[in-house]
Image 1: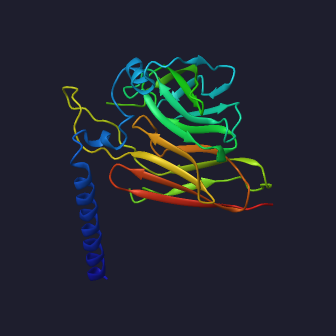
Image 2: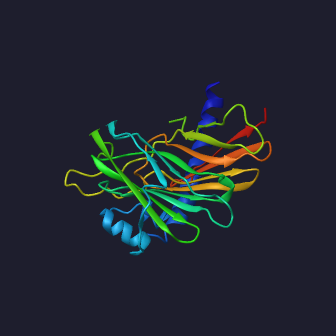
Image 3: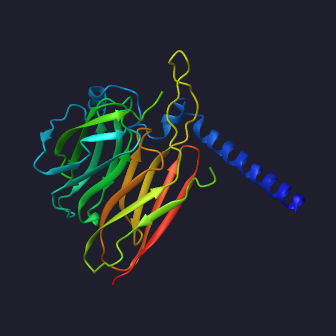
Length: 165
Length: 110
């Protein structure tokens, strides 16, 4: 019994080393480390810089009428804040919602998540649990297949921040 | 820690052909936050968090999420899809430590 366990753990460790070596080798060319995996996201920046970098100053229309941004008005725990974004727009191959960005203005990493949709979805709806560091506006930026950008935002009051450090 | 990568996917139990349904999925993952030392400088290491989530239905991509560390621990996602035929929904999670986790759920018509 003892012998079998030792062998198993030994094999497990070997496997872990293999994975570590493989990922290390993959990551070496990109010195940015953890952030190399998604270059368009995950930077520490202000929300203005982030929006400028991602959208390059393209005009954004007010999409409050089309975008239903479902966030709690008060989040007791900033570590888990459910955000649901629903867009009342057709989802056909000719015209559909291509991407939905979730942006939390005051987070150190303001561009939180990007969802890429396909017409297969049938409905432009995504939801995710995000972290909020402090009371902040949460925006949903919607890009349609023709390139139109729409934005909606709502404030979330955070009692206990969830971003730490 | 041994639970990392455990995936739960929920689909509605009664689905009719052509319905647009909402799928919820959850993965057990630490989604490590950026840590700072006493001087407030970021400790540079390879933080383990999920960068990409992809969902397919009947082999066709439905939605893909690109994530950052601003996403919660044990992240949960939801998305919609149009149920055209019975079949599997497959969700794949990829993290920065080379971890790849997959879960499937079957859509069955009532």
